[in-house]
Length: 80
Image 1 (cartoon, rainbow, N blue to C red):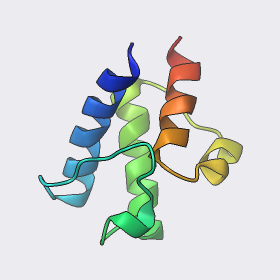
Image 2: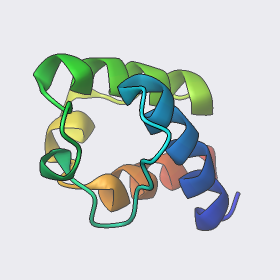
Image 3: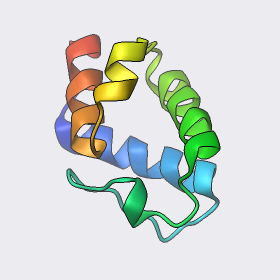
């Protein structure tokens, strides 16, 4: 799966979780860039991403993700 396809799928997940069709995530998108992205929504987001890609993040991975690009790197490492 190409990085661009992962971003397309992540855009859908983010839009669903945050109920905002205008969201477009990039490599550098962080919680500061999305108004409703708080700690509770972070959990919902992680679960939704896991379901979308059929993976399970471990706690170390979740705590080291600094932006969406880091999340994509982990997804690629899991599905390749």
